Image 1 (cartoon, rainbow, N blue to C red):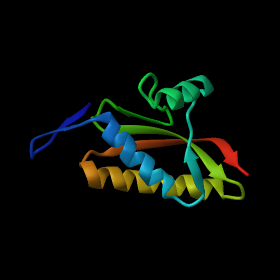
Image 2 (tube, one colour):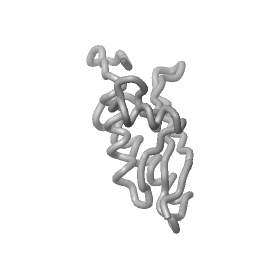
Image 3 (spheres, one colour):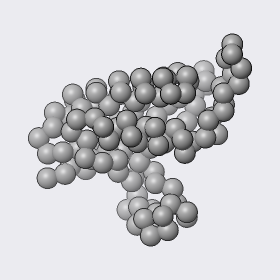
Length: 118
């Protein structure tokens, strides 16, 4: 649960909601094939148990000391994609989407390219 207090009141958002918002925003970006899981074992167990035992770990969201969000993404890109342009697009889209949907500032988006789809 991510909780932030501002002039309007207290905002509480579940991590699952934020993860799904980020996942949809990333998958809509040009050149992104999928959001990856970090660990192969966890990925296999997660797919078998449908996320009940281990949650997919392609998106990690945490708060920093100033109350903003730090988002770590592990992605798979399509072959031939300009990775720098894709990462820049992902960073801007995720920041805009999360700030519009939830109203919490995104301070940093870390994008890790783990795999390539041929």
